[in-house]
Amino acid sequence: MRKCFESDLEHLEETAAKIAPLLPENGVVFLRGDLAAGKTTLVKALAKAKGCADEVTSPTFSIQQIYDGGVAHYDLYQCPNEKFVEMGLLESLEAPGWHLIEWGDEALENFLKAHGFETAVVTIVPTFSGRRYEVTTDA
Figure 1 (tube, rainbow, N blue to C red):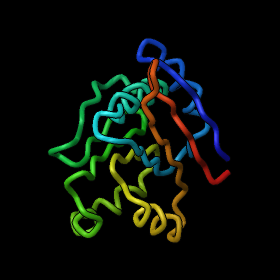
Figure 2 (spheres, rainbow, N blue to C red; figure 1 turned 30 degrees about the vertical axis):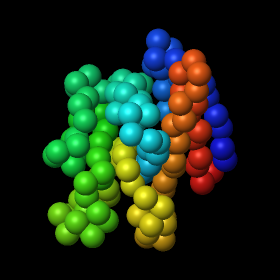
Figure 3 (cartoon, one colour; figure 1 turned 60 degrees about the vertical axis):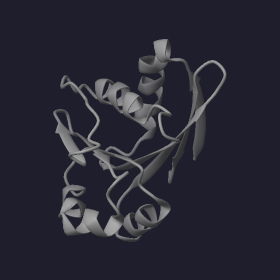
């Protein structure tokens, strides 16, 4: 299934509330887009839509942040798939909740699907007035 939403920053929380029900309840969500496309900003809005009260920050240097409400956030920009596995982060994806991954590639997505993980992809594309969010799920 594929759905698209357009939003400016002012209405992002409303858009995230529409995206949230499309995501697997316990699964991995790949966030794709160019540098500064708004991946972490979307994670903040999605976490809020899921009821997370924690302050969401970018895990660029820590690679992983875990928040209340079943939200985990990963930034793999400087973490190749082999390092992700070596660090034991693959096992953390088995925990209930959303696992929102920035910069996860198709190889990791295919690997996780082959091992039974539910996945979704949100591709963020800048537009003249904001962003387009293309949500692709297996359902």
